[in-house]
Image (cartoon, rainbow, N blue to C red; front, side):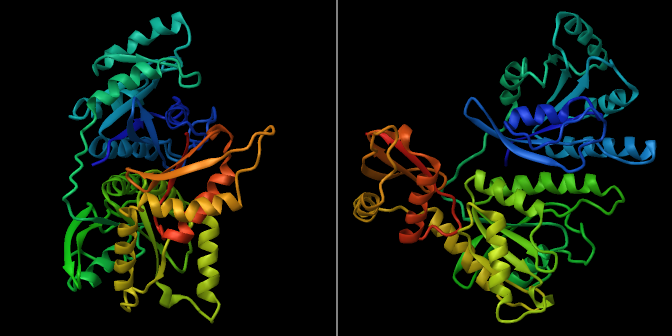
Length: 433
């Protein structure tokens, strides 16, 4: 299972700022107004060679103050259930509020590691003011300034001590996770594949509560299928439900070898689909795109090609992935989706002999060498594949620092053209000979 760090707290205490700092992005919108964060933000972070996922639970915009507080409470409950470590963020400039107390009561009953993060501590006076939060009875305080980054290192040093060890058993069966937005047909696909109603299927979004593992052994394929949780339960607080879905999806994603990302043909590929795709790419997972409900689309001889081109444009630059157009209800191309996943898994494990790599790639590089920089020419002498979670290649040359991103993409494209790494992220390193 993956290690997930969830940042919880009332609105406007700096959760999104801390999220941006930990993930080294500016993905979460930061504003002085409370309730700016509507979407769930999730990204990868690294500290002392330990990778983990960070969830910004965000605020919640509602007209009723009661619904407002209930929504925050709901997110805290979900975080307690799903996260490895919880960062409870409070604001030193306001002290303890009623809503802080409410969240603290929930956290005191949890068995998860909880870190009280006192934000906006940027001088000695505020450091003294932070001691008031000892009154919540949640243990040691971690004072920091999310906006400047001071104090985050000490916090992360303690956080990673509570991470679970993720076993790497090479003898396990391949794991394919079916991931997608609610009500795209994930559970229906599994039922169609195994030939019985293993999972409850309804047209109501959010029937699947937990990630379900199913041993599949039919038609010459054997692997574990993971049906990811769509939503936990029916509720009017849709944003919290999406948050729950995201946390479960991330756990399944990091556990799987190949992600079968299912999208709705009628609605098309949306931002949440693209977020999950890029998260899979960052985690070096194989990916297959399943376009479900294709029977509901009005088609002519150009529709499939045009739809596929639109998807690849939105996924760029990594868009060398199989795209399978399915209709689960009509049982159209559902077995082709399994064959595509098996092919991607095979590509993920593919090893190219060093002699073959050099025989194919060196003449191409000689015909199209890296551009000169400051009158100096990069000469690539030797190529080899190195071990990794996905295919990794080292190009040994005299001046690796002069090789720019466009040339790395050129080399990657040539590798894909000659060796078929469809559906798999490739990592390329230029090293000193």
